[in-house]
Image (cartoon, rainbow, N blue to C red; front, side):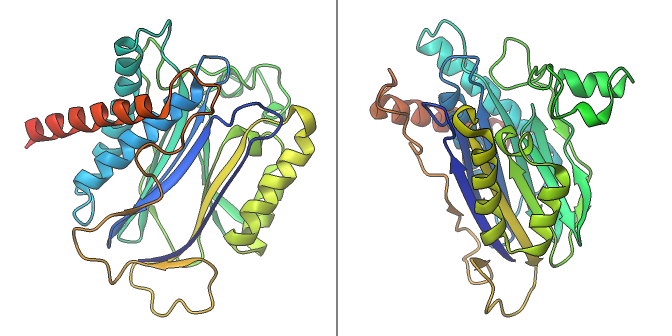
Length: 309
């Protein structure tokens, strides 16, 4: 596989950045994940961190060197992330479980499939056109679907931030899966939090992704969205890849290009590392507790994986 990749996050006008993003890859599979911890509930950044850790660890265990059942993997990984958040809250006697939205994308064999819960989005762009975009699990999308609101109200409606689906809630999340998408060289996949898409019109997002490399487009859009939001700006995060192909030759001259062809079959490379990102110094949970939580999650996943064999 060959792809160029770039990710960036901006804290905006908030005291804590509750967004988390990262990617993992083997020789034949690539996983992209972005989570937006929900600020209306305590410790959203903890929920987002746990979600990334869970999904990344399940990818490490199943991508050998690719995931055999991608649809099942995505659904089970997001569900497992939910239960790990709930279990952590119960173990540590939190008054309520922290919550997060999530979007994850698996790319292998020139095809992509993604899943999401909440309003963190994925855009699939080809030649200045959006081929697909995730549908937010929000009240405004429900109203649009029922014909009680106009699509033009998506970014302005007072109910645009009211979600009915997330990880960590008392009810089990409903994971929405995409169909398999056949990628072509030059296609762009971008995952982003609502801090970006609520500030930038879709036409601007598509224009940026179509006329610049992801290395240029991602930081430009993140900075632009934060600037428009000003002192009240939300956390703003984006992770994007430009696909070059499963067997693309060369790669010279492309920004931040990654080629996986030389990776050993059992090796996994990842920007999602244990214990990262560490919560802020004002958080009641210190680094040791986060590490302990991640170790507990890893042990639980390994046990469940052995039962499935």
